[in-house]
Every structure is written in C-alpha cells, then in structure tokens.
Image 1 (cartoon, one colour):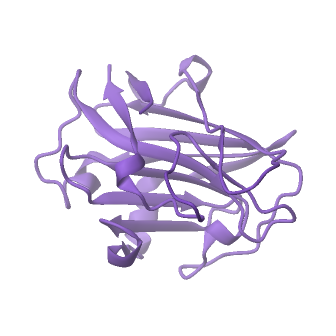
Image 2: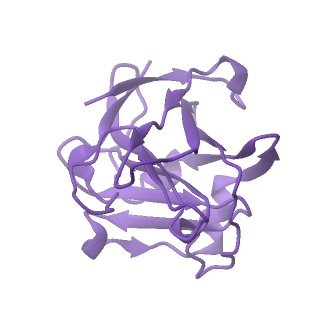
Length: 200
C-alpha cells in the first residue's frame, strides 16, 4: 500500500509547492501514452485536490447532471474518511467540468449525489494545458460530515484513497491508478485497494 502526506495550506493551495503523486500503475491494457498526477492538500475547512493529465487524444462529450465523465478523458479521486469503514466518495471529472459524485461501499451499493449544491460547494476549475488538461476542486469538511459526522482533519490522522485516470471511449481506452487494483477486469470501485493519505 502506498502512502502520501497531505500538506496543510492556508487559503488556496500553492500547487507549485505541493508534492505530486504519480498515477502510474497501468491496468488492463498493455500500452498507454497517457500520464497523470495528483496533488492533495488540506486547510481549515476543506480538502483540496488537483489532478492533471498529459494526454493528446482528449475526449470531452459528456455533460449535464446525468453525464458519465468516465466515458470521456477522466480524472478521479476516491476516498474513505473513516478507518474501518468501506464506504467512500468517488469524484470523477472530465475536461469540461462534467462531474460524477458517488457514495457507497462498492459499485453495486453506490448512489449518485446529484444536487447542484454539491458541485457548487466543490468550486471546480478545469483547464487545458499545452500537453493535456487539469482539474482542481475542494471538498468541504461540512460535506464529508453529512456522511461521517466524526470526521476531523488532524495532523497524524489518515484517510484511505486512490486516484485514477481513465477514458472508456477515448481513441485509446486506458486505465491508470495510484495504488494497484487487484481485479482482472476494469474496476476502480475497490476500497480494499486504497492507499493511505496522511495529514501532515
């Protein structure tokens, strides 16, 4: 299991000074020319996440509240805030800002959280870069505590998480993860394969 230390920040993170983790475990395909990274920090009232991809054949077709960003070029952050609890959030974005926010203990038990208020709280910002794209957003602690009332972001504590890059309907379908996924077929919804992210 891999481990990452989340840096504390005051206000908006200075992403130039936040360490990046590589989303570089190639899954279920032999070749992939896509590269991806994640950065996670925390402040007084929210987790801050930035995901970026180096990708040439970008697909961005999904949109609206029923869109499925995983069909497009997609960057994903899954996390479980409570030790010993398999329930987790899965947050998925495409380059156009289409979001899927789910919650549950596995694919068959997960529900989509579709409120416009959810997305407004996340304050997402997507951008196209010279060699790909990126998305940055926040997850307020007040949102997390709706599901995990005892959650606290305290130095030395940890959440379990994984980061993914996929593109089911891109020119070259691909699947990448931070922590390896022990499945023979494409399946990111495996909280037992999450790594640890520790609050500095």
